[in-house]
Structure formats: structure tokens, C-alpha cells
Length: 413
Image (cartoon, rainbow, N blue to C red):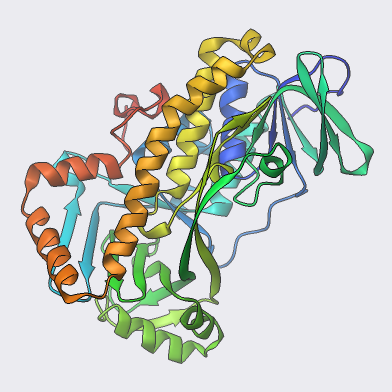
């Protein structure tokens, strides 16, 4: 990346936050001819864990298309990406289950498990090819109006000017608070425990999730056939215990909770836990600031859609800017309204779906348990319904930006 002097001529877009969504947006905007400042307080991203990152994402084929258009996917270490072709979901409180197979939709892959470090490696390698992007280290302290733009005052006395600002600075977005955008909030009593485990039997390229009384337990396939990324949503007290207990106790408990579906859990990495939250911004923009990714919404991880929704934000915002032209950034209100119209309903549908599923499977009443088990069983035998559900899960349905459409697939990975 070639840094430019921050003089009188402003950047077209200043992106605050250089995580996956922010870096993807920077690549897409640079491809569209915009001059971009990518601003973050992190000088470099942390190195990957070994043998696999604890932070992994389940990516849809639509997300792969977006990352390919951004130039990142071919620059990732694809040997460390795990495609999966099947998905199994079942209820611990009964016999209800549903399974999905990509072949039923005439596809080879339902999705991919990718490490955060691998995604960022591909994205920053792609950014290095763009002379229109400058990476600037600093924390935004204040915003000041400027003619046809805004001045960002950064820590250390630095500053820059931009036509508009994209807040990609995470769930606790300081920029969102700075411009006074409020949040709708729903509280969960759950924390998520994440770990990587080696199992006695291979995963077979299938993502699996069992709904327990305290929350869902997911085993997601990693590239090694006997390694899985585990996401266990459970009570705060149990999560604290799971992180603190010795490895042998955790492995035994985890195996029991998963019904030893893949045999014994023979090895576990260290564990981390984090609270689960539901958040949705009451609006996606204010003045010259627009939200994307976790700064705009945060959802339960049970469907593994959080990163996919954020990448679609980046792709739609980049498409709106590219279609309107750089001149539209001088007065961006109409552009921001167009972006929010396209994203808000799509995001809210996913937020509500994950929230209701979480509460449905946590409901202890026997009648509710019978209904959900019956519903799972019936749905599993309804071919057309399953195909529709798979289309949504793969990111093939809804208001998609052009770069995310299935027609973009020339050679499927």
C-alpha cells in the first residue's frame, strides 16, 4: 500500500477498523477507484495460534465470492480452509434432527471454515496491491466538520480528511457512540466457549450442532480430518468452569455433551469464553458516518452467520458507492439511505431468526420440546423446504450484491 499525504484533498472514504469487514470494504472500494484510508489502533494483527486459530468463521459460498472479488481468497492459505458438504442439527431433548447435503442443491460445498488470521493474511496481501489504500495507525478521538467532508483527529496528534467514514470498529464501536447512534439490545444469559479438539473419528466434512438445555454445541470441521473447532454456548457459570477445569475433565464432559458422535475427544487446545449479545443499531448512518459489520449488528453464533452478514454489508456498501460514483460522496445522505434500505431488512431477518431459534431450543416446557422435535423431523422430509433453507444458509438468496451471486462461480472451490 502506498500511503499518501493527508493534505487538502481528502480521501474518498476513511474506514475505521481493519478487521475482516473493514479490510474487505477497503479492497472493494479500491477496486471501484476510491481513495481509501484504513484506520486502526492496532499496528499489526496477532499471529495465528497453533495448530489452528481459536477464532474461526463459518463462511458461505457468497462470502467466498465477495472475498474473491476483493482479491483475498486466492491469497489465503487454502490448505488451511475446510470446505464442508454436510450439516447435521439435532435436539438433545428428543429425537428430532435435520441434515443438509450440498449435493441436494447440486453443489459440492455448503460452506467453509476459515481462521481469522488466514482471512486477514489474504486481505492484507490484497491491500498491498492497491496504491489507492493507505493504512494509518491511530485511534479516532474527535470528528470535525470540513467542506464536503469531515476531519478525523487521531491519537498522537495526527489527522486526516475524508468525504465519508465507514465505522467497522466492532460491537463496542467508539465511532458509533461518537455520532450518537443508539442500539436495540436483548440480553442472553449465555457465554460461548471456544476450543479446537481432536476426535477419535474423522468429521467427514460435516458441520454438526446439538441443542442442549443451556444452549447449542457445535463441532465445525477443520482441514485435518480429525480436528474440529468447537463453539459451546452455555450458561456463564458453566462456561467459566469449562475454561478453568483441567483438559481431561473438559474432554470427558465435551464428549458426553456431544453424545460421542465422533468418538472420544482425545485432545483439546486452550479454551476461551466470551459473552453472547444481541445488538442492532437503530439507524445505519449519521451525518457522514455509516456502519457496517458488528458496529451495526451482533447476533447469536448458533447459525454461524455473523461474519457472512458483515461481509454482505461491505459488498453492498461498496456496490452502492460504485454505482453512485465518487461524486455522490460529497453529499452522501441518499447513498446511505439506499444502503440501509438494502441491508436493514436482510439483517433484521437473520437477527430475529437466530434469536427465536435460540429461545425456542432453550424453552424447557415438554410441549414446546415435542413441537420443535416434530418440526425438525417433518422439515427433514420436506425436500423443497430443505432446499430453500440451504439456499439461505449458503447465501444464495435475498438482495445480493452482484459480486456475491452464484453466477459468479466459474470454478467452485
